[in-house]
Amino acid sequence: MSPAAARLIVPPMGVADAELALSEQLRDHTAGSVHSWDLVTGADGPGTRMTLFLAGCGMRCQYCQNPDTWRMRDGKTHTVDEVMERVTRYATIMKVTGGGLTISGGEPLLQARFVVNVFKRCKDLNIHTALDTSGLLGSRLTDDDLNYVDLTLLDIKSGLPETYRRVTGRPLQPTLDFANRLSDLGKTMWIRFVLVPGLTDDFHNVEAVARFVETLDSVQRFEVLPFHQLGRDKWAATGEPYLLADTEPPSRELIERVKRQFAAHGLPVM
Ligand code: SF4
Image (tube, rainbow, N blue to C red; front, side, top):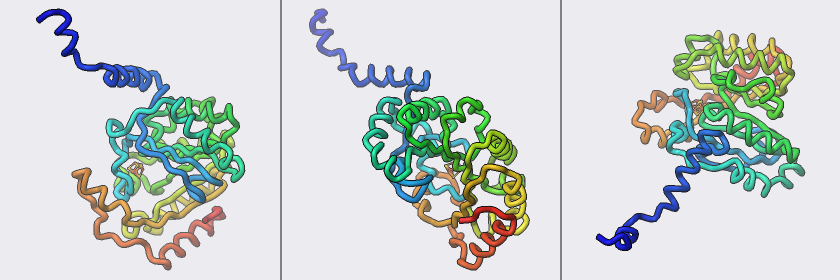
C-alpha cells in the first residue's frame, strides 16, 4: 500500500483527540463528569437556581431516587468553561430571584476539586453557590474551599450509626464531622432528612438526628422530605435489588409526628 493510500484509511481522530484532551482536563479538575442540569425554583436552595447533577456516588441509599447518577463513567464530560457558559445564561434571573447555582449528584464531592473550580468562578461573578451533599466526603474540602460555598444542603440520612449504615451502606461519623466543621466555621446549612416508613421513622432514630442537629450553630432550615416512589423504574436498570419496592410514602400523620419531634428540639422545620 502506498503511503498516500495508508493516509486515506487512517480514521478521523478529531473526536478521539477531543476525548483525550477532555480526560486530561478531568484529571486536572478543569472538567467534570456531569449527569444532567435543571433549572428549578423553590428547590435545592433559595430563588431560581441552576442545579448541576454530577455523575458518581459512593453510597447506595435504599431510598435513592436517582440511581442513574451512580456511575461516574455514565456522565458526560464538561469543562468548567462549558458549565460557566451555561450558568451565565441564567445569571440575571438568578440574581433577581436571589438564586444561584447548586451542585448536586450523585455525590458531588467525588469530584471535589472540579466543584471548587466551578464555585470559584461563580463567586468571581457574585453568583450564589450551594452544595448538595451527604457529607461522606466532606474532608475533601479544605476550610479555604468552603469560602466558595454559600450554602450547604446537608443530608443527615439517620441519627443512629447502625441505621445509617443500613440506609446508606456507609458510616455516619464523616457526615457528623463535616456538619460540626461547617458549624464551627459559621457556614450556613440546610439540613435534610428523608422520612421512610419502616426505615428512618423510628422514634429513637429521629431523636438522634434532632439531638445532634440542635448542637449545630448555623442551621438555617431543617427539611423533612417524605419518601416517594418516583425513582422506582430507574432501579430496574441498576440490576441491584430495590428493597423499598413495597414501601408506601409516609402518611400525613407520620410526617406531622416527625416534624413535631424535630420542632420540639427547636429546629427550624419546614
Ligand atoms: S447519596 Fe444521593 S445519589 Fe447517592 S445513593 Fe444516596 S440518595 Fe442516591
